[in-house]
Length: 323
Image 1: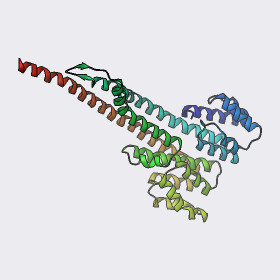
Image 2 (image 1 turned 90 degrees about the vertical axis):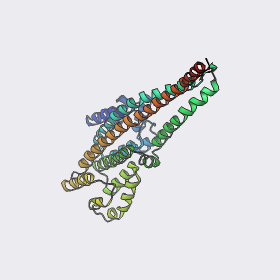
Image 3 (image 1 turned 45 degrees about the vertical axis):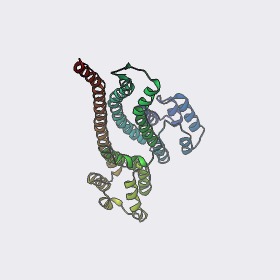
Image 4 (image 1 turned 60 degrees about the horizontal axis):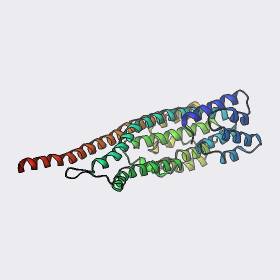
């Protein structure tokens, strides 16, 4: 998948070209960012008249699936430039925090990997026979330290890539990340709802699509509980307070948007606010957990050093007593 910064720049270029009168097929081709081969292929398909839904079905993996839904909806309602600007802003906000998190995690992870490679070597030092190299033992002990870490990273990447509903459930069980998970789900939902409404999607369909994009069990349950309200053509705003998943500030945003007739703008602002909260929570977690990992590595190193060299001290004491 393409980076958030790359997508943000590309979407912004597309919006500006479309607003200046450039045809979508040409704009997709000339706007730099994603791989040129993919852009030319998408541009050719659009230029040949293929329906946008079919184009998105065969789009390359770097184009997020949720973005494809927004693009298809915006094309049908004629609001593609504004939707692309919304997507650009969202990816820019997420990308800025993602970079901070990656940079914050790299150092402690690097220290952990060095420790996992060096500590087995230190433990091969015996105060009676000296240093004895054992390649199989080194590989085994290093694997025991690195294996669980990489398995955890692989699992997280798999859950994120597949948009698995288990991911929010797992995050809700972890201190600090629980706050991030809740804020991110609300950010995804509010942003999607604002984008769908801005694109002219009927309210019930906008809610359904937003709940699906948020991929949060609590939000999905709230939407299903309010389905009769949508079927009756009524406003669900009065029922939001009954669902704990929607905090008071979200209810206030929704109520203000309904009363002012600018629900799309208020939802987009709400999404920005929750995205900021999610970014802060993730940044904090990316500092605390790597620090704890670094502390564990430091304690393990100190313990190993004392264990190895403590044997030398015992040997010296025994020699002194025997003398």
